[in-house]
Length: 156
Image 1 (cartoon, rainbow, N blue to C red):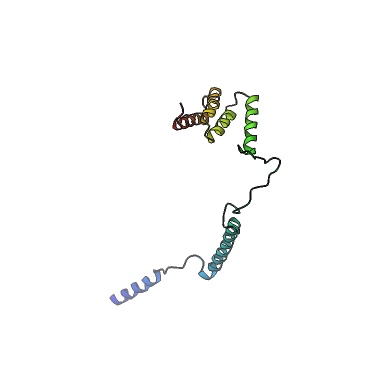
Image 2 (cartoon, rainbow, N blue to C red):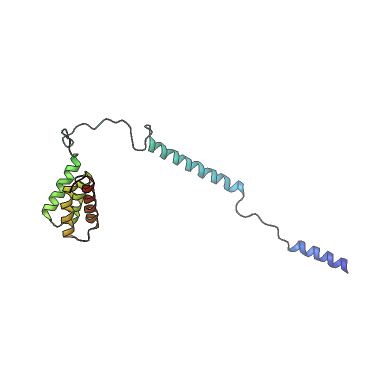
C-alpha cells in the first residue's frame, strides 16, 4: 500500500507543478522593431546635430561673419546706443508722455538705464513707478539695485 501511495504522490506532483512560461514577444519578433527605431532615432539625431552645428562647428551660427553693411536704419558711426535701443527709448518716452503714471513703462526705462550702469538716471524712474504703483516688485528691485550700484561706484 505504501508503494502505491508514493507512486500516486509523485504522479500528482508532476501534474500540478507548473513550468514557467515565457512572457512577452520572442526576440525574433521585437528585435527588428527595436533596431528599426534605433536607426530612425540615430538618423534624426544626426540630422539635428548637423543642422545645429552646420559647417562652422558652432551652435550659435557662423563664426567670423563680417559686420552688417551700413543701411539707412543702421548708422551708428559715432558710437552710442544701437538704433534698436534708441528706438525703444523713444517708444518708452512717448508712452510715458502719454501716460505719466504707466509704472511698467517707467520701470522699463529705469531698467534700461540700470543695465548700462547709469544708476543716478535710473532712480527717478523707479521712484515714479513706485508712486504710481507701490506694489511694483520690479521697480522696488530696480531701485534697490540702483542704490547698491551707486554706493558701489562711490556715489552718494
